[in-house]
Image (cartoon, rainbow, N blue to C red; front, side, top):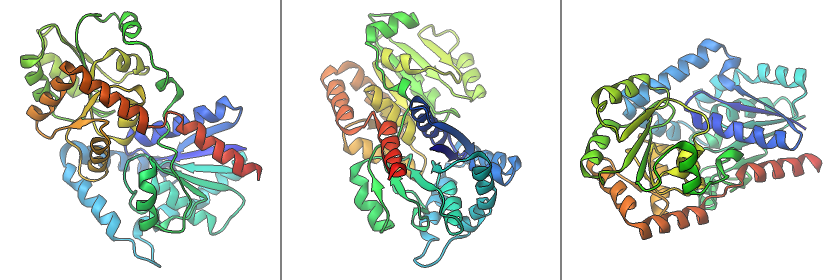
Length: 369
């Protein structure tokens, strides 16, 4: 078996899930390669879509909500959307790559790639194809795809997917995260390794790979109201402007430490008491896998709203839209140890830490049949 993972540069969650699958495959001696499915049109197309996504999320998030609603509406039984035909243009190039390199299994972590694979399967049947969902919602356009199986984030979504797109095989494995993100250190050990104080509260702020969120107002309120020895760790992702702004506005505040995009962030999860997080499907899953109490910041319209709803209903996170609400929720988790412990227990119960392994188990068994 040789696996090709097709992602898309519309947020790092799709790529992170793909890397988790490849990591698990390679641990079993299976070759795995990941590519951006939009590159098959051209590098320019990939960069263009990525730029649209980033700018919309940063400056016009309502557009994402509008696009999400339209995606649900444009598909009708017996017909296909313009999005399907645009993605189908990549099918022949994808197949040429598969044949040339001997890929017999293809996994999509974005619905654009799933649409291209659906078109490809109408011409060729000599490979297996799968879709990995990376948000706690029903993916738009999934009803016009036809793959061997769909790995969805939780058993509660099976009925929702069957109602939206019946006749498909839905496997509730959870969202895959990389193995290094599942091996939790004790708080004391993590703090010692990172040089963080053992006797202070630590609040971690994650704004996603691109640095979303009204973090400055949240930090300002927390600095005013948190215990005086609290340490704040602000991770700004690739948003250099945000980090520079934080350093400028809070440069004299020794309790605040800022970071750009870093690898190996797992130790910080283990060292912190509370996390403030962008409510992406993958980022929320990673937090829950580490079993850290966290508060989700105001979501973008669409699937992030679904993520917030699901995590709130399951007791795995708190949320807030205004900075004051978010700060209040953070301080309650920082000071109320029973509340924080109950949230960790819910995360442990609801989130599967072995999703990548179970996905590979299923795919391997199918290929051996």
